[in-house]
Length: 68
Image: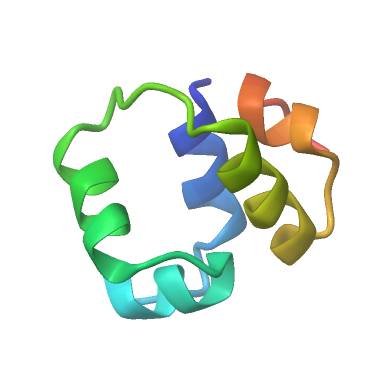
């Protein structure tokens, strides 16, 4: 599973890109780009750390797309 597929599973309670962005602490335009490119490259380390903190997981889980 890619990092984005992992994040999508972690945010499945969100129904809009805006909700996903809010939950992840990133801009909605970034989420929109990730949605358009389902095989998007992994985020920069600082972004991965921010996302991991928001999801309550280790940054490595976000980057490698593993299940908690």
